[in-house]
Image 1 (tube, rainbow, N blue to C red):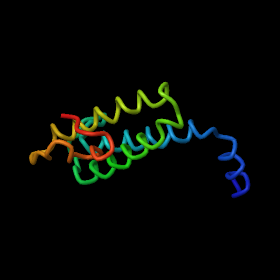
Image 2: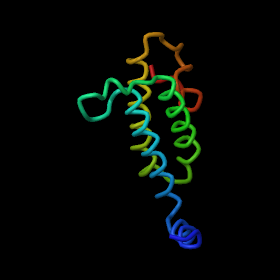
Image 3: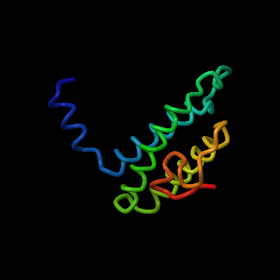
Amino acid sequence: MQDDDLTRDIAEVPAVELINTVAIHLLSAAAVKLGLGDGPGAETEVDLDEARKLINALAGLVTAAAPEIGGVHAAPLRDGLRSVQLAFREASTIADAPGKGPGEKFTGSVV
């Protein structure tokens, strides 16, 4: 596929679809880094530093995009975000103060 073909393909995809796709990738990657992936070795994938970064990026994207993509699309992303934020708190041995956990500067405290 040439660059012109790729550019044309991206140009045809609605913004809502792109935003949702990126958010789902961030959400999935955060879940894997929290040890929530499928498979027998999922717990060996835990990397809380990486999970924090992914959750922060997801929270920023979801918060900024929500007015643009509407409640129908934003609500499930917010639910997924909250789930990984809570999973992070559960997995962490050192508790973040309320409002200081990953993504909470964008979403507020999830405790």
